Length: 67
Ligand SMILES: [Zn+2]
Image (cartoon, rainbow, N blue to C red; front, side, top):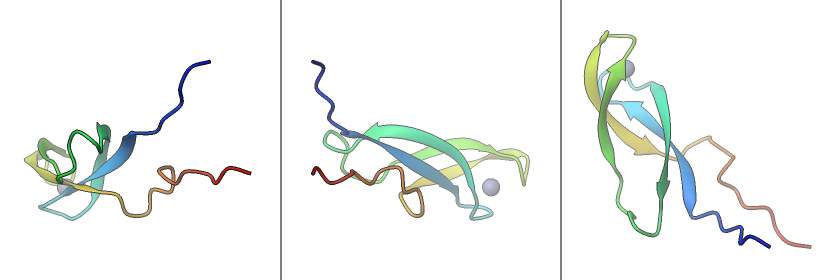
């Protein structure tokens, strides 16, 4: 049976310009524990801005407790 470990977490990318979450990505939290910043397209300002990582209000990263 395949090993199901959830090391790759879903992270949101918050735009530094308008403060909205435009993009989502996954990252391995073991290999990259630091917050990542990526240059992504911002539809609000229609330009490429720096997006920083956030894990707030995602919910899907929560691992269910085993019975
Ligand atoms: Zn934006």
